[in-house]
Length: 138
Figure 1 (cartoon, rainbow, N blue to C red):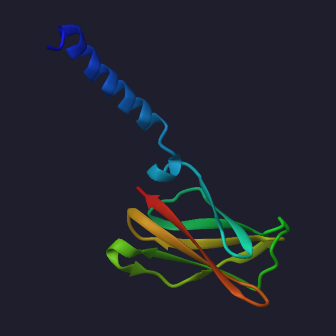
Figure 2: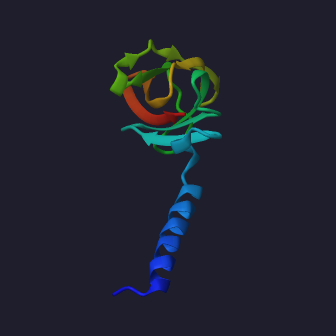
């Protein structure tokens, strides 16, 4: 039979552990603060950053490097927001080059809260590659 002290201490420990876990949830899961994520393709490493993500227009910055770390010189970079669970897909947004290997896509609309997939298409001189990022808009 469990002692009275254990009956009260055990639930308090469980509550404390849950509270501690909630304090260390990464910002990208909550949608709060800035978000930076990285994905790799066969030829590139893509770092996507945003100050959101939030419902409505968002600005996404991309840093694209080759596998050896040099800034990627791409002909075209587009982002397409997709919300698979709701069947939403918006037209691709063209990212503008802002520097060597740096691109910015302004006014990329995330129309509602929930999980969004940001599909990035990278067009180089000889190939097309894709990277995908999942964001939670809350």
